[in-house]
Length: 105
Image (cartoon, rainbow, N blue to C red; front, top):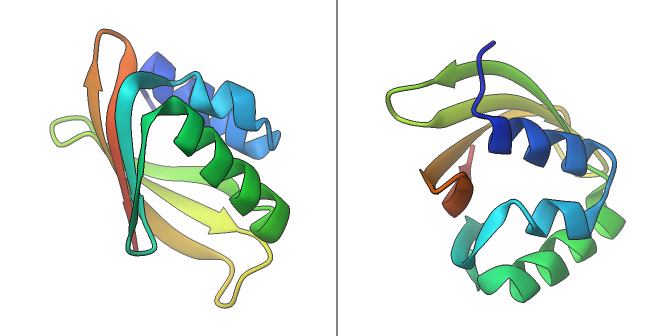
């Protein structure tokens, strides 16, 4: 599967539960939408993913990528009801970083 480099880096950081490396994948003013909440900026994104890593221990296994729409489908496994589940990760990319990420079922 041919993924943009920054998405590959994000998946590696997630699977290693490296919250700082995960946050570095984002632009300074990026936004993440997950579970009905919006997280703004790198520091808030790092706090959010750090808490999620501690609580859910979720890993991602890419199953499909829509290059035109920048949508990654990934089997996501962890300590949460319904695991594993295929989630959709909708990215907006610019200058080699993630500007926006929306996670949905």
